[in-house]
Image (tube, rainbow, N blue to C red):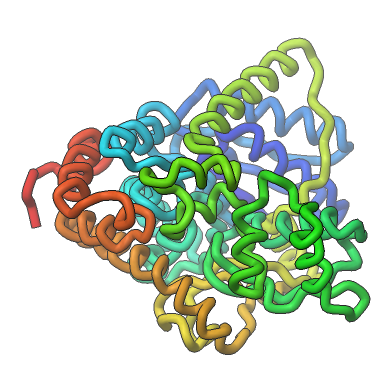
Length: 437
């Protein structure tokens, strides 16, 4: 049976979700699970969870836990990354607090914007190192990445280590589809769709129930004032663009220049935009981990729910030959011809024993491609900065970001980037020299 390696296994709550899904398949009984994290305490908790899950679900599972990444990777068939370089404290806190000094507010800050750029600069070198270890120790493995900023990370991997098979996974496509089914009052299983774009900015090009286009019904929700207040941004954009976007309103509000404005505080209230949302979520996740650890100490394990995450489904399909369609982040290579060929797109992919096979979607409606391109521009320059160590390109990426450019002057952007790079110097040695090119 295949060896599945978790890198960043100290993300116990998410690791528990993936492990529960994997163990739900009888065909994967006897799986070998290798857990790796740099935090021994968190790693030990995840190891306990893995053993308890196997016992509870009646599965045979070989579990090893190590802080040695190369040991964890040796002989792996699948490698799942869920790392957060620099952690919530101090790295994410820095990403929020320094921009705030300049008047730049964020909601999530992990995909685009200055927060996404800084996270990419910290994360890409580590992912590239992991991929190079994979190339040496388990060259046939599929490298599955969950770490954000998804598109930037996958773009850098495809450039730096092209021989390693890799896909980036997110739950925004199927998660949003479930939300829309709920809003429409129909079973999720009866909703069919075709979605494409980039991670966190993909659009449902077709959205149907029993062969009927449901977009008119979604527009009626708007006309009748029945849109959930936490989802006002996306429904408003649907009315203007004609298509619904995959990622949440709080995410999408910071990918465009229209909603978070210092000169228009009324927009924050009108659209119910939760500023500083990601730090709040991180605090909740830390509390959730503490609760999980306490429950394990008392001999209990929280209930296991099947999540529908794509990684376990991919592993099951590749091990058994069961065909499935998933949405994954892969190099474009003509899949969406009116987006750059080397950027990373999120498209439907067929999965079976031969692996993950992206499908060609065709050209997007011109206005969707144009909006997506504003985000791809930032991704391209941030990836260049991460791979070359050119400090100026960090500034250039921030200059191109739609939200940052709408709020700050060029001098403010440069000063903010310098302060962020200095604050993150322990994770970004290639940018330590102020003024470096």
